Length: 60
Image (cartoon, rainbow, N blue to C red; front, top):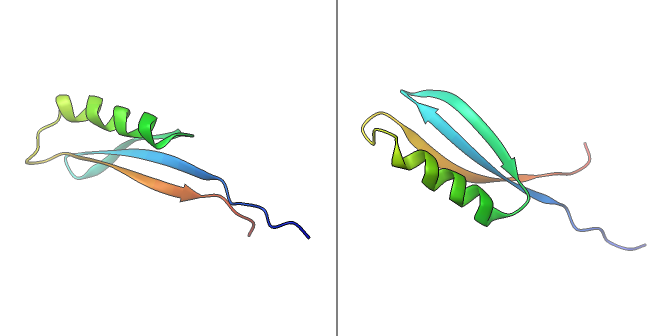
């Protein structure tokens, strides 16, 4: 039986004033990183945050 690779989606998360504000999913990490950079341009580094995380898709 052939082993199937698990698909990885990349999630960009925006946290505004300590609260999750927006989440966007991408097939390529570079696209998620670009979204993060766009958000960071207008965010206050003392209160806001953005991060890119992998989302592993699997059965179960």
